[in-house]
Image 1: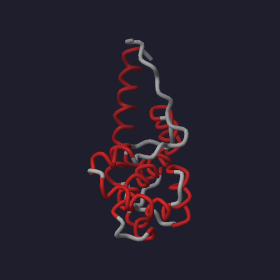
Image 2: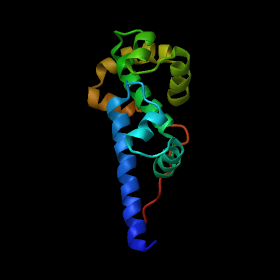
Image 3: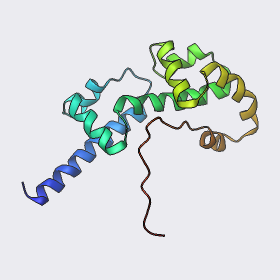
Image 4: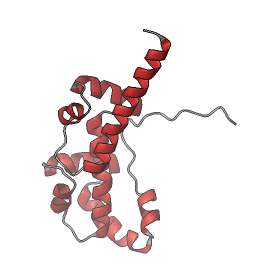
Length: 149
């Protein structure tokens, strides 16, 4: 395989991965799984998982759960929905899995987060609240330092 065809293949792979990531961002509340995401871009689930992890530093499932937790955080800050209602609104089918993953990413259970932030975020503009309350993913892709300094 020539370097031109290798580069072209790499670009096609990146386009596929971006399509998968965009789909997760758009359809996080839908019942998505790695097999369905892989079928959508005509690759195997194993190949998609390996390539996604190489490109983004985490599995497609971990990325999906992070999107769901981010949206859940916003809904919980509003304070008008119960934790169970938020769980189902963001596409999680299991309250236990949702609570466990939420606690891993945010550091407190969803009910505690709801109680703490409903009061505190009332004073913050939404654009600031979203930025300062964004969860940090476990095993986040390492940042590469720029040599432009």
